[in-house]
Length: 336
Ligand code: HEM
Ligand SMILES: *[C@@H]1O[C@H](CO)[C@@H](O)[C@H](O)[C@H]1NC(C)=O
Image (cartoon, rainbow, N blue to C red; front, side, top):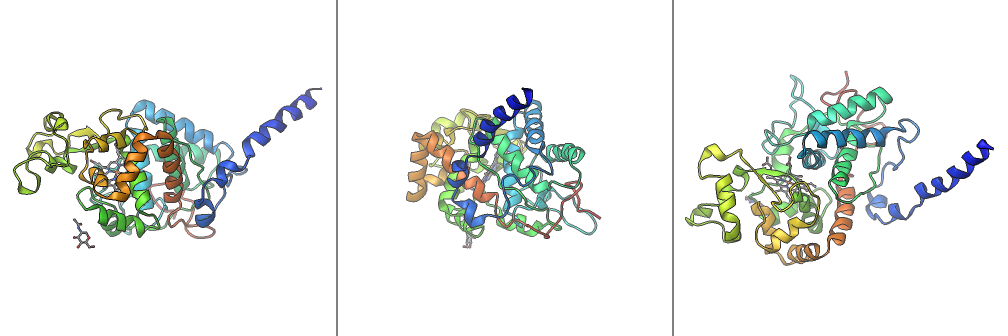
């Protein structure tokens, strides 16, 4: 009797969990495809649960951590591909990426990945790569902030090297033109739409004053603020970032309206010329990206679904598979 109940109740669950449409609506799966969504289903069945719980704990301890984990994944994937190279510490033999200009005193969340990895190692030793953990943690961070879910293909392997020079030259800068940023995305197999969509990640998290203060007082030697920044935003930003070096590391929300909420507020800000970074507001200066900004500001569901597609694409940049790379035991260093 109990045996029958068990088998009946599991059948419908099986069908619910394994219906294909969600996966097939992601066009990148075929083109970039490498692993499967259930790559660790047998070897580490509790992986998703561990990541979900640990990300939840991390965000509870520090609201900003969701944003930081998302950015950590981006900065990993744009340098040497998604290979957890950003997680490697400097050693005598290896110069890591953590001290590259875009990362140093800026990228956060390394300890959270360390602690998820430690929990995963306890459950399934030497099985799950650090880079897959990072990709899953970034997805969880977005979901738990109210943003979209996207299926993460698994089976990435951890790199054996890092590339500090590439971190300095291939990550986008907030003061370079949209053309240059787009070229950096194209070099990674992404496109100008991905620039507009993925910049929407700036709906969460913070920026230090030095990344945008040049807009507030004397923009390009004019003696006036950046005309692309609406004057209504000035008093608040000038008070957070007084015109002196001592304010350089003060923080402003990237999306003042809802800093911890993954919504489409970023695009509403751009429509009102209150985007924080010069590179954010620059999306309004190009007809292709401006049309996307307008669409996303009016339709949060369109933004959610496009963001999910672009994140899945970004998460598959230059991945190591098969026998390449390794499964690190500790995310901060390569195995002996
Ligand atoms: C398009 C070009 C981009 C530029 C120029 C850019 C630049 C920046 C800068 C300057 C900051 C502030 C860093 C600091 O003050 O320490 C920042 C923060 C952030 N970026 Fe981007 N970013 C870009 C794209 C992206 C993408 C594609 C993502 C993720 C998909 C992303 C996610 C984030 C997040 C979540 C934060 C806040 C992090 C935190 O609060 O810890 N950014 N970005
Ligand atoms: C943008 O890229 C061009 C080369 O395509 C380069 O000469 C220029 O210095 C770059 N601008 C910035 C601000 O990085």
